[in-house]
Length: 304
Image (cartoon, rainbow, N blue to C red; front, side, top):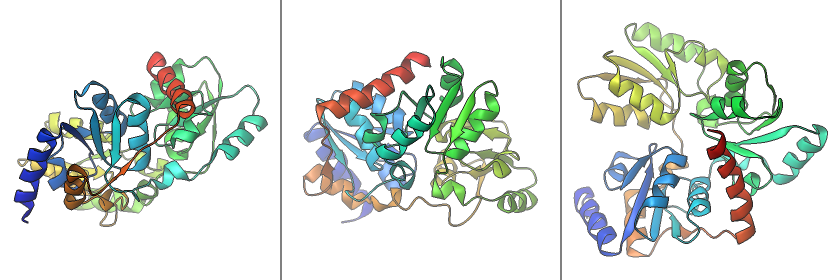
């Protein structure tokens, strides 16, 4: 079966079976093209809430599918590839967070959306990369445990200096690969290009940025900007997608190996298997987990 024929079959079957397909922006182009909604993880989970379909396929990683289930517990949620995890989401556990809380009495606990459902149950509020600064600024607490990304936490601390953020060494392995040397080399090779970067990168990288923001923020900025050239400081697929959407502009990656291999586990045949009913895995969360993790997300919405 050719790529085009498989795409046509996926589109036909999802309509026939009343299935909604969500695709994170790091997915391959051929998957993006068959999705109903494309974007950042939390943005997709919100879209799933209002989608009329009762079955949702998340083409992303497990914590994203869990967030969809938390916000839409009555829907069937399928993760496109059973092994698609997130090293950042999985690098801490509940016992570690409880120990941090015991060592820092009175501190509120902020969980980046890139955490497991279990971790969210013991935190006070969630944040996304685009809302983190606003949420932390609006919190009543002055002392905040921020998990798991220390780079995003450091960026928030810089923007909200009147709060005391307690950071733990953790983060995204893909964004952590980016170095200042990479940035300087890219700027030398493309002197007219603007540098757009994700706040999960280190301070040594973000200090050279013309824009710092979420994946969707980076894409929106590039599309709307009058500039013609951009260096993209996030997962390499974003430069590819932008090149499709803005063929009159130039997009350069910061390095050849800036790839999220968990995201790339999902293939178009996997998505086909999900709509046929032979692939993917159902996300199951108990009621207590959904309620406790949901409170963490509700507080994010209340604050920002």
